Structures are given as structure tokens and as C-alpha cells.
Length: 105
Image: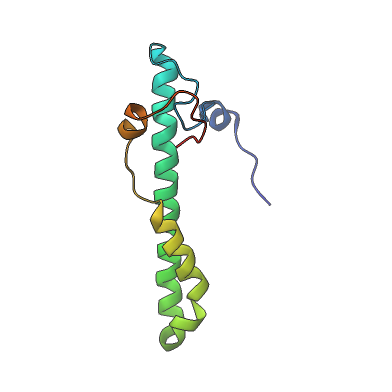
């Protein structure tokens, strides 16, 4: 059962989607919030890959010789997470954003 989130945590949650869609570049607070949201999403993906890697290491150690078969699902999940785990920053998305592009990152 998930624990309830505190009011302080909910207040610090971003309200801006992780993209530059609909953000006026002259509106500095919204612009910086979009940058922060993009970086936050990238860090979340990186940390998820890190957690999966730690679990994979534990599985390898626990299973020993049979780790190739018994840890296969975790290994595939880790490989999928690796594709998106690199923290790239926001400059590419910022400079190459097309107005009307709603893909969001």
C-alpha cells in the first residue's frame, strides 16, 4: 500500500509537463520550470535504471550459476531502461523545439 504524500512533497511537485510545448521563452519562470521538469524526468529515468541494475546484481549473486535463466526478465528490463537513462540536458530540446510539436521530449 503506497504511503500518503506529505503536503510539502506535493507542493514541491512540478506542475509543468517535461517539454517546451506551449511555453513562451520570454516567460522566464515558466521557461525555467520547463527546463527543471525535463531534467527531473531524465534523472528519474537514470535513477530507475540504477535501481534495476542494483537488483540485477543481487539476482546474479543470489542465483549463482543459474543467473542467465533466472534473471533474464530483470536483465531485459535493465536493457530497456538503459536506452533512456542518459541525462542529456535540455538544450537540444530547447533549441530544436518546433511550435505545435506536442511529443514532449
